[in-house]
Length: 388
Image (cartoon, rainbow, N blue to C red; front, side):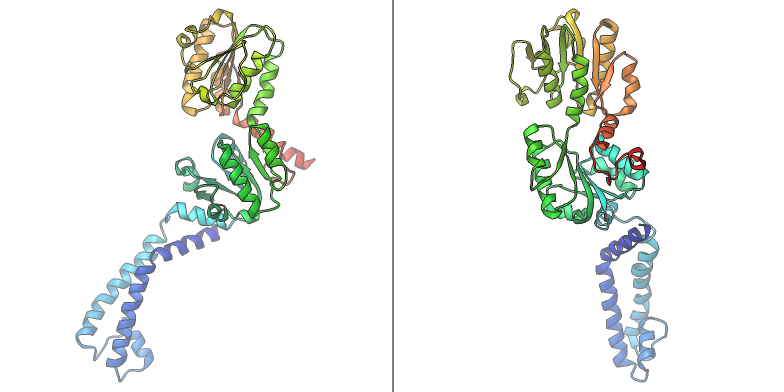
C-alpha cells in the first residue's frame, strides 16, 4: 500500500510539473540542434554532452555562452527543485487520497460521514480492513485525508465519484446518509455499476425499505431509529401519566405518537419544525411549535407535576449542551420524572447518567446492532461469530 501511495504521489508531482519539464526539454532540444550545426567537428556523443553542459562548446559563440549560463539554472530550478522540494512534501492530499481510492479492491465503501460511519471506519482501521469513504463535505473528513486514508470528496450520486471509489470491485457498501432521495439514487447507481455487492442502506420508512429490498436493487435496509424505537417501547410499556417529547425527526415523531396511543396517557410534543409531521393527530397528542431548551419553555404549556416521562431527542451535535442542561434541571427540580436522552457518542453516557437519566440511540450500540445485520464476509462482522 505504501508503494502504491508513493507511485501516486510521484505521478501527481510529475503531472504538476509537466509544463516546466516541457519547457526544459524544448530549451535543451534548441541547444542540441544549434550545437549540431555549429560543432561540425564533433561527433554525436560529444554534441549530446555539450548540450547537457558536461563539455564546453568551442564554436558556439555567444549562444554557447548564453546556453552555458541558462542551462544550469533551469536544470537546478526545475529538476533538482522538483526532486528535493516536491518529493519530500505531501502534494495535494485530496487528490492523492482520491486516486488512492481508485486502487482499492475488495474493500468496504462507506458513503456519508456521520456517527455510525465513524464506528465503521474505526473498526476497519483497527482490524486492517480496506475501505474508502465517499463524502461531499470536505471538513468532515479532514482528519482522514490528513492521515492518508482513501477518501473521495464529492456527490455520491455522481457516477464519476463512484468509479473513483472503484465501485465495480467493492466487497460491500454502507450508505449512511440522512437524505432519503440521495440514498435511493445512490443505491440505484451502485446497482447499475455492481450487480452483486451487498448494499446496506440506512432508511427509516417502511415503504422505501420494501422498495430497495426488492429486485433489481436487492439492497439491505436498516434503521437506527427503529432499533431505538424498540428500546423506547420497552420503557413506555405499562406506564401511566403524561409525557413530554422534544425533537423534530422521524424517531421523535414515532415516540410521541406511540405514547399517545396508550391508555390514559397524554403527550406534549415540542417540535419547532412542525411542517414535517407525518402521523395522524389525536386528542391525546398535543403538538407545540416551540424549541424547548429551558424549564420555562415547558412550564408555559405543561404542568410538570403531572409529567412522568420526558424524552429529549435533539439530533444535532450543537444541541447536546441544551439536552444536558435541561436534563440537569429536570433532575434537580423534578427528580421523580424519568428522563431519556438521545445521544450519539458513547463517551457522553457518563455525563447523562449523573442526572439519573437513561440514554439511547448511541452510535456504538447502533454499530453493534448493524454487525448482526451484515453477511458473514463483511468487514464489520463480529469476530466472536466468525470464530464460531
